[in-house]
Image (cartoon, rainbow, N blue to C red; front, side):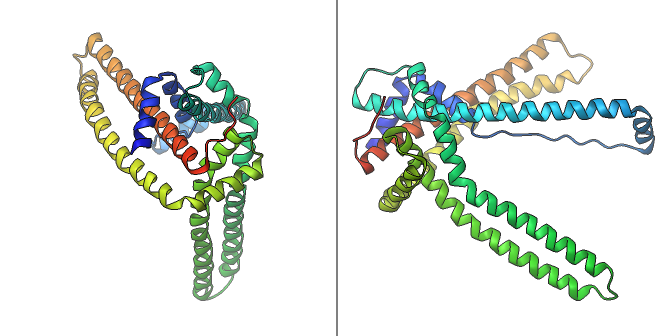
Length: 311
């Protein structure tokens, strides 16, 4: 509990950690939304007339360009997130030691200097389960597709269908075996990350260091993870209590916008409500990310010793 309080104190009293937390959370994942619409035959006919070869070529080129930009942007955000995480870790250690107070620039710079090594270690750690997953998917598709083609030429394909089901069950079991393996790697990762940032270890040495730290402190790690889980539930409840009223305040003007009596003021209120909700959500996410990283770093120092290198 003392470590959790110290982690919160470091985060709350050093607002630059919030910015690092926001950047770390920003590059941790992305969400994509899909929209569906219904069409009739006349719509499809009109679309076929409109979709000339020249327009098809232009749309294809635009799609390729958009995909390339999305990949590049995702890579940049990922590298920024890795640097921000490294900065959170190094900054927490400097603050805990009472050294010269770091700034956002100096803390982020400490992470950026090792970003390529951190990226390489991350890819190396999760390469095996990723490759195995891809091979299992490809293997299942090839075997199931080949079996389906063979069954299509038979008079009674029911027995062959049962064989396909058996193959699918085998591949499903193999997929399930990847789950605990990936979970262990996920638990190793934060310790390997800190070993590289704070002890200047190489990729393989940091992974071995992460496995050793996990194995020797598993009980305390589980207790800290449980504390994080319970506190996160409280944070979610508080966040919902704050954001839901804002959502209702936004929803009413948005609903009124669909009517004929909608005014510019209602539109402005709806937009402002959305902006306020996004800002509050980002702030909560940033503080939570920074607090968890700082707390975990302080716990890591207790488990492994404080003989670390922070430049």
